[in-house]
Every structure is written in C-alpha cells, then in structure tokens.
Image 1 (spheres, rainbow, N blue to C red):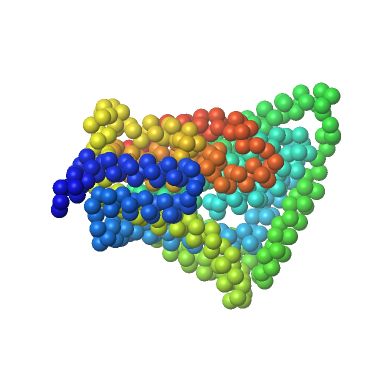
Image 2: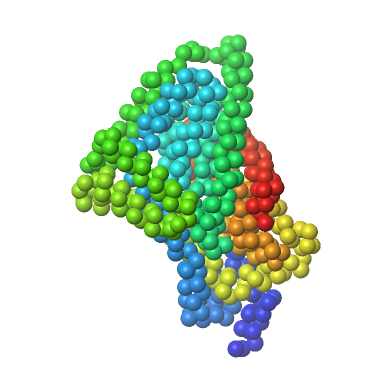
Length: 461
C-alpha cells in the first residue's frame, strides 16, 4: 500500500471521503439533474476508487449492501403489483362512493370523509394513485360546498403521509435497509404510533372542517357568495363511479367480476395483512404468493396476466432500482469504514447530552428537512450517520429509525421534492405555495407531537 492510499484510508481520509460522498449525493439529488439510481451507484464508486479500493473490494462492498436490501426489493416489486391489481379491479371504488354519500353535504363530515378516503386509497403506499383517485372524486364536492381546495390537499396529504408508515411504502423500506431490519420488523416497532397518528388525522380534519364551516358561514353573508347550499352527493358519487369505469375500460383487460371475486380479494388482503403483522414469514414471499393468487383469480387468461404485470412493472422496478442502487451506497460507506469514522468524528464534536439524543433532534426537524432534502437523501444519507452516531450511546437501530421516520414522514406530501405532490397540485388546480402555507405548519406540529409521543413511549431508545 503506497503512502497516498494509506492517507486516504486513514481515519481522517475515510471521514473526508465519506462526507464527500454524502454531500455530493445529496447535492445532485436536490438539483434533480439525475436519477437517484445513477447517483447512488456512481458517486460511492468514485469515492471508493479515490480511497484506493480496487474493483474486487467495490464488488465485495456491493455484495454486502445487497444482502441487507434484497428482501426489501422483492417486497417492493410484488407489493406495488399486488395493489395495482386491486386498483385495476376497482376494489376500493364502492367504499369511496359510500364515503362520499355518507358526508351528506356537511362540511365537517366532508373533511372527516376526506381523511378516511385518503387512508383507504393510500393502502397501496403509492402517492400518485392516491391523488388520482381522491382529488377528482372529491374536488367537485368541495367546489359545490364552497370549501377550499387547499383544505382537501392538506387532509389527503396528511392522511396519506400517515399511511405511508406501512412496510411496503417507500420510507419504511428505505429505513429498514439502512438499519438492517425487515420492513415488517420496523413497522411493528412503530405500529402503536401509526394508530395514534391515524386518530390525530381525524382530529386535524375535524378542526379544518370546523374552520371551513365558519369561513363559509361568513362568506354566505357577503356579496361574493355565488351559488346554492344544495349539494347532490348521490350525483357526485355517480360521477365518480363513471370515471372509475372509464379507467377500467381504458385498461381493456378481461377481468372476472361478481361479488365472490370482491369478497375473495378482501379476504386475501386481510389474510396477507395478518401474516405481515404476525412476523411469521418475510414480507417478500407474502406479496409474491398474494400477487400470483390475485392474478389467477382476477385475470383468467395468461395473456391478461402478463399484460397486468407489464402495466405495473414500471412503478415496481423504478422503486426497486433505487433500493438496489442504495446497496452500493450503503455497502461502500459501511464496509469501507467511512460511516464509522464519520460517526466517531461527530462524537468528538458533540457533547454527550446532545449525541445521545441526536436522532430525536433530527426527528423534531424532520418536516423542515423534507423541504430541504429528497426522500432518498434523507434516508440514505442522514439516517446512516445519525444511526451510527447514536449507536455509541446504546440507541438501537429501530429507535434511531423510528425518530427520523415519525418526524419526517408527516411532511411527505408537503415537500416540493415529491413528484406525487406536483400531480396533486395539477389535479386540484392549486399552487404549491398556498398548499405549503396551509399544510406545512400543520405537518411540522404533527411531526413534533409524534416524536415526543414516541420519546415518552420509549420507542426511540
């Protein structure tokens, strides 16, 4: 080993190169000039070469990283396809229709119904699908009742963010690959918090509905008020059903129909959820088998089954590609010792009182950080450093991940780095500035409350 390589692989050299990899990766991701898969593959490879590691070592780093993320990759691919199949069959359509009718044109009930619809539709963990279904379905109702489109966006964004804690959604999968746990294990750790958060979403929706009710009451007394108070929710629900049928016709697939198919899909989904929550089996096989059964039951022809896989493959492979690239990023940082040296350097700088609670501090700032970093940058760059640092104080990987996830995830659909949010803005006809103005304070306060609850429950230890 020559003197240059010795210098690069010294504690100071590894710290500098590791920080360089993280800063450059975050910087490129923030500018949005390149796909995350490209960035998280090439930047760490260049860093490893600068540090003096050869091709064989880089291959070993990747193999190590791959071992920690492979189960997550399998789960993502088949979870996205599975929920895509359910969406194709219109499984959630009657429920959404029922919730629209149940609101009866009452402002507060509409707000609560919006929260419920957002939660149900986001069971697949896909933001784009959630907004494509909820906003076209509910925006006519909001317009008819003179409710603000930004209240609709705020409630759906908050509900979907909380549902994003499910293990097949992006944040949990990313975090699990960093702390070397399965997504289900990490989900089980924060499941009590998700239950509390779901209740708080309804509280927030009710408060926003009450505020809207008062605003509309004042608006009625002004000359600017145009229209009537009468709202035909049955007509709006019928319009939603018609749009969903058009989408199914556009797919053009031959699907089995009938009540027995719907009941079977519900029973299958519940059974899979029980298996996931029990932890008896890895999530990858659960979704693989579930997807195979759903394909056979819903699509009788092999050609239709193949077309269904092709239809949902782009979304599935896009997420899987990011995780596979993260294997290189995490493998280089971990196996070269860069991450450990960064953490040790931080420990020398931070006092013990701060170092032991670094994950909680970062969690409290999670929503503002979501406006400054992308999801990939947050979980693959910030979390590894924080986790390695607090591990020296006896904090578990699940405890560190819980604080960062809970503090950050509420702001998922507030950040301009979320492509699904831009879709939501377009569908609603709003502006991102006004959405952030209303939703950001709510999301940040919500995130802070959740982190403090997690701290009180001992889930960040």
